[in-house]
Image (cartoon, rainbow, N blue to C red; front, side, top):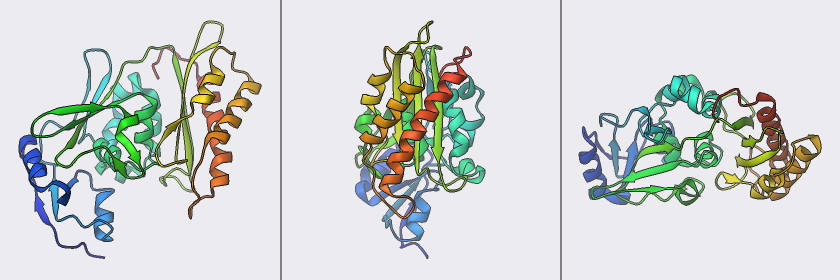
Length: 294
């Protein structure tokens, strides 16, 4: 299909882009990598009157270390750049491990960090990573910027807290101690497809291998990515043995309330969600920390 008629702008500064967003409000869509927006426009599922292409806006394509030891990503940073970044591989290996699961190389060459997070697909890896890693999401308009936590940013499928006139400009990941171990698991029909269900596990063990803290984040199993706090609490204060992992898998399955669709039934997602949680925790335990941060 061909897209409906729209007006196209390609600003060359952040200020110009924000002024255009202020002027056109709800009538405007932002074009970054175009991997989600352009198919929607071509199929006329999205009919924006205005498309604002931010690819010529400087200063939004970077991966840098923050003063507190975390990482910051500009919204225009390509997914492939994240995948290949030595900083990401060293400081956030769980993120580096997940990147090859996002589409195919061609998709990652064009797709952007900000675009994936703004699109807010509940089966996508990056929104789930934001929740798992306690990210800060920076939104800017012509007057100010504000910072939201993932719990406040992701509202429902394909819906975020971005207001008319705002642009997602940066994502920040806080520093995490080297005690944290990590695991990432997902299941999909084919390599490059969206996950039917997946899990990101982060655990912190003491010298006796007793769990001190845990974060279990599921994606593809609800309207947004979600943490399973009951399962997290079941891990804390216990050595993680096979019986504990089975308890966690059961709690995860019981907690999930996914929908059925053409790709998988709700019952399948509930059952496999527990399996993904168990396997991701097993991967975290078996990996050890190796001196590497989660």
